[in-house]
Picture 1 (cartoon, one colour):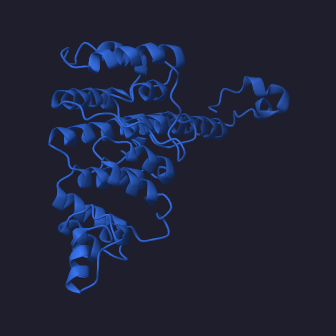
Picture 2 (cartoon, rainbow, N blue to C red):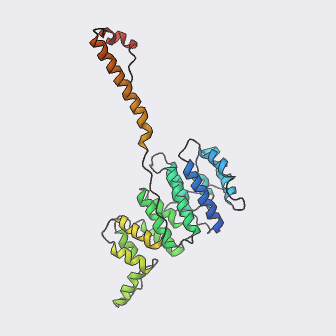
Picture 3 (spheres, helix red, strand yellow):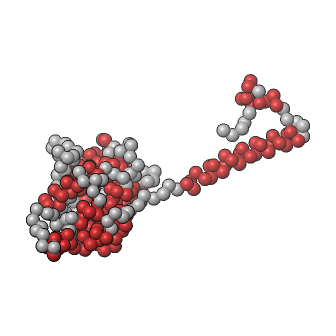
Length: 297
């Protein structure tokens, strides 16, 4: 089987099929376990080796994990292996893993697994295209991921039909130039209703992908912080809240720092006591005697 090319503007991602509900349940379980242990001391191949026995054997996930494990042992990366399984993993899942494995990015792998867990749980609860779009787009915004590659990956999700995919691909040229609330309002049923009420034809407009509720929320949040729009949409549409990166735990470095400070204080106190007893030998601080000093670095 020839390797698949990474998704791009000229090479849109291959669209898979919507999986059975049991597959998404097991995916959510796997991503939850990986999220809990990905930041630990165990490499990803050891985690896959251990967790492949914990997922339900009647699903296709164990076979996918077997392939991932084989590829990870050779290349050390999950992203290329997931891209080969485009019929099982969505392009957006693969994109998140690719970004978490990038050397120059700040998107952590445990954050990617947490996002994928929330997305799989939402699919179990009968996700709709509008809620899935807002969830995935908010993931791109909050984690400062590339809009171009991220929207391209989103367009290949099987939950979107051709109209959705074409509109999502067109967003790449509009994001940053037009307010996002305006973009949502102009493809909503609320905008079409306003056109009809004003006696203006709606032909050539659209496509009208979002409902009347989404259009009203977008209109009410024009020229505001996009976080207010995302928060309102999440409350009313019921899609899962986007996981936020956990702040770094600074307490892990606190004890070593305190130990070094105590060592420096002890050295200073020792020098003060020697000076008070008039027994301080300053020759040990000479260049030729510096090897005799046992001061902390």
